[in-house]
Image (tube, rainbow, N blue to C red):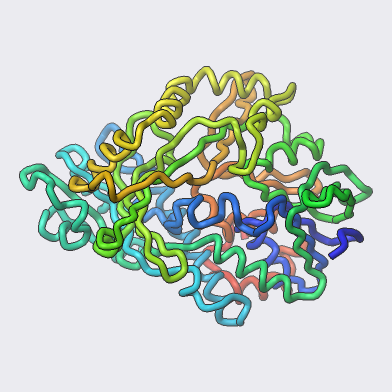
Length: 474
C-alpha cells in the first residue's frame, strides 16, 4: 500500500496505546482518515507483547508498591483505588467492542487469574492487614479476601507455601476475579478490526524519521525499512505512542512543551518455568515486596500467563541497566536523547539516583543461580533445572525538569500535548497498558475539546465506556 496523501490522524507506533486511541476515534467519527506507522514488521512487538510486559491487567489488587505505608502504620491506597477504576474502565470498553463485533470474544486475550499479595514477617503482615482494611473502603475491592492462616494460603498458592517454615507469620490477600491480559493479542485484534474500516491504513516496517509543522497540522517523514523508500504524509493530528522512542520524536516536533524531559531506560528479564507439572500447579499472580532500591516495575511476582491456549509461569522481572530505548533499538539511544533542553535535568536526576543505577547494574550481572535464589523466597522448593532466563521488554522512565535546574525521575506515565492540541505523546511506563483507555480519553479531552464536549461524542462514549470512569473534569 502506498504511503501518501492527507490524513486526519497519524498514529506513530502500533502498540496498545495507538490501537486504543485509533479505535476510540474510529468509533466516535467513522469518517476519519487514520494512518499508523510501525517500525517493526508486526504490531505490538515491543512493550505491548505478552513476553514483554507484566500482563496482569494492573488493577491495584496485588501490587504493593501502589499502596505505600506511612510511618504511623496507615496505608495510602489512593493510587490503587484509581488504577482499579481505570482497569475496570478498560475491561468495560473491551467488553463493549466484543459485543458489537469489533473484537473477537474476550477469551482470546483475557482470562480470569486470581491476583494475590503475599508477605511474611510480623511487620509486613501488619502492613497487609492495614492495607486490606483501607482497600475495602472502595466497592472495587469489596471481594478482596485476606488470610493469615497458612493452611488457607497454601490452598490458594501451594507452590509459595511448600517448604516454608509454618512458625513464621505470613499473610495474603486474594482477588479471585483478577485477570491475565495478553496485550499483544488484544492490540493485534484492534488493528485487524481497524483495517476493515475505510480510511484506515497500517504501514509496518515504516519508521518515522521527522516531524514538521505544516500549516495547521503536521508533515510526517517516514522511511520504509525494507526498501529504503522515503515518503511524507500530512496529518491534522499526530499521536506519538512509540514506547521508548516517543521522547525523541516529541523533541523533533519542536513544541515547547517537550523541553525539559529526559529518559531513563530500564531493561528486564524473567525466569520462565519449563516444567509443565509445576506450571499446572500454580494458577495465580502473586506479588510480594520489592527489594530496597528496586524500581516500581521490578516488584517480584510469580505469574501465571496465558499465551493462546498455553499456560505459562514466570518469575521476576529482574531489572537491569541498558542504554537502549527499545528491545530493537540502538545502544546509542540514551546518548542521543540528551541535549541542551534536558541536559541539566538528566544529570541532576542521575546524580540523585546513583543507588538505583548501581542496583540495576547489579541486577544485570546476576547469575542464573543467584536469580533462582531470589525465586526461592517465593517458591522455596524451586529446582534450578525447571527454569530458564527469558528476556523481557524495556521500560523508559521519565526524567522531568523540576524548574529549579534539577530533574525528577518519574515512575509513571505522562501525556504531553501541544498548546493547540495538534500533537500528543505518551511518555513513561507502568501501569501503562491496563489503563490505556483512561489515558487515551485524556488525550481526546485535551486535543479535541470541542468535539469532546459535543452531544454526538458524549452519547457515543456513553455506549463504549462506563460513565463513572470518564475523566473527572467531565
